Length: 281
Image 1 (cartoon, rainbow, N blue to C red):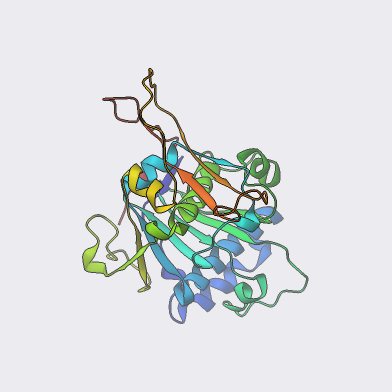
Image 2 (cartoon, rainbow, N blue to C red):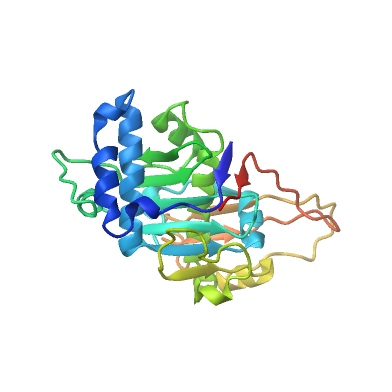
């Protein structure tokens, strides 16, 4: 599946959004209620984002490492939220752009003057675009963060690669929550690749850049050490992220630990993505 590199915010800008909203919110234009719901959420996500969102730019070295990193027993409730509306723009040209919205449902809907008639429990929506139409992946945002749980919740009709990318966005949030890896505020002129806001309709919002640090610096920043004196045949390892809950942990209790992947000696890590990006505009 091809994800677009640049999201188009034209329909939700200025006063035009009301015209487009009148069409999007009319459920008679859809073949089924599910598609109507996803299209409406996607539209509101973009509208909310241009009003209050931020962009997070991810170094390619960061996404490469995180693609080889596992989440271990981390719940949605423990997931660090840097901002309730974040556009993830990956430096890697093979990865699309994704909009993660975790705003409260009432505030979320009010951005489009949309009145919720019932209580909603949705806490997380990932919006993205393919060559055909905008798409959205919705989750209640509770319990353990696993691919199996997400697939069970959203069903088997989800576009291939969307769960993987949602997972990658979650890992970016965890990575960026480590004090030493805190995102850096940057200006548009500091973007060195295709993230410059030259596409039509891109909002002028704050930009944060998630930077890469070598493995040793990451471990040192968490107050941890690794044994390196023992000689053995090392074949590399995947990275992992886990949280410490037991009372026996003093320094690390309540914190999320990140141990980056280590490639075999004299060999660069190989990362295979299931999705590719379609650059346009």
